[in-house]
Image (cartoon, rainbow, N blue to C red; front, side, top):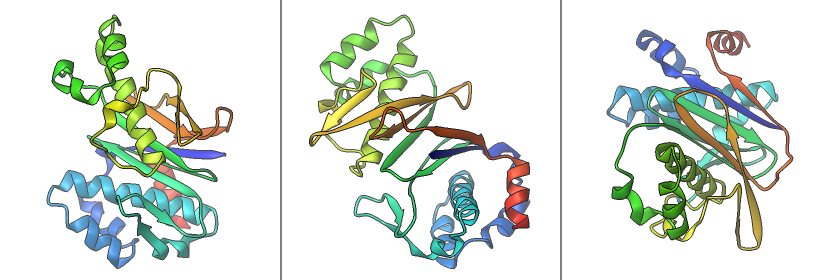
Length: 217
């Protein structure tokens, strides 16, 4: 089972950030405070709170101290699930499960797609400009690619245009990865990427009730 949580940060009061920060290890607090913008601090804080909540639910809360990052920045915890984090604007998504996994969420905003065509595979360009909703088509492809690169621990690569994400799967190094579009927020596009087309997943809104449940544990 893949567990997916998403949070709208607008209900998190700035006055509560210090209290929530104190729930995390010192090294995480230092990392979060290294970001200058309050919005960036809040997004990373809540991502780690969702992680700690999930660790607690599985009786593994002490593993939070084993948080590390791979060379390209993808976090992992030895002895626990694979997990991944994404944020865009006031929204944060977090997922964990027994298999390598990537998640990406993006708020749909008007943009000039032609300015970004160097990041697209030639077939993707043709596909996007043939669609009635070009913006949705572009973001679907972009978010798929991001989730794929995160699942495969590649980070954002300069040769991203070699990947073609029109279909709902992609193969690399003889491994097939599948994309699952998530229905979370109406103005966002989000995809899950993993090595299975039939692994069950559960999507949960991390709201005030869930935060209170975590704080009582």
